[in-house]
Image (cartoon, rainbow, N blue to C red; front, side, top):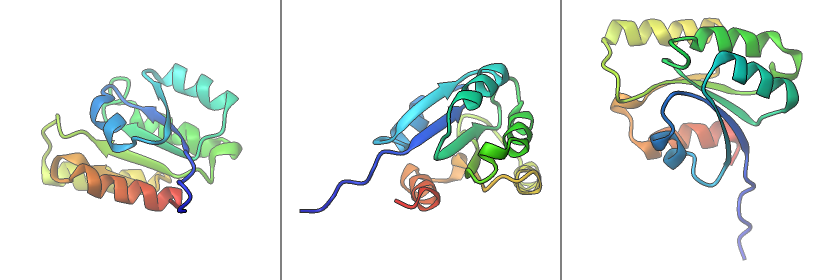
Amino acid sequence: MTALPMKKLILVADHSDVRISAMLNGHELTFVRTLDEARSTLAGRNFDLIVIGVHFDESRMFDLLRHVRWQERHRATPVVCLLSAAFTRHAIAAEGLEIAVKALGGTAYLDLKGMSDSAARGVIDELLGV
């Protein structure tokens, strides 16, 4: 009999949870809508992965990414920043976002506009080691 993979605890900081919930099905998801809520949640818990949407809390993705990387307890936690398919983007802007995410210590940047859910899930599963 094959053992089922362990559920991982994932913090999701994004305005829209429908597609992300489907992509991360099988894991325990904690959604936050504001930077203050994210800080409070992170203060009390460790997560296996943090997912931050570009437009989280009126485009405060970088603020949350900096906060995560400044906290000793979360420095090793993988952080995935993503751009939802619902938003239009320019290729140069997307490249700039990816560079900024990496410069601030993000683990990965995913542009969901041109990516299938299974491809995004594959990247996330690899980061989680499942």
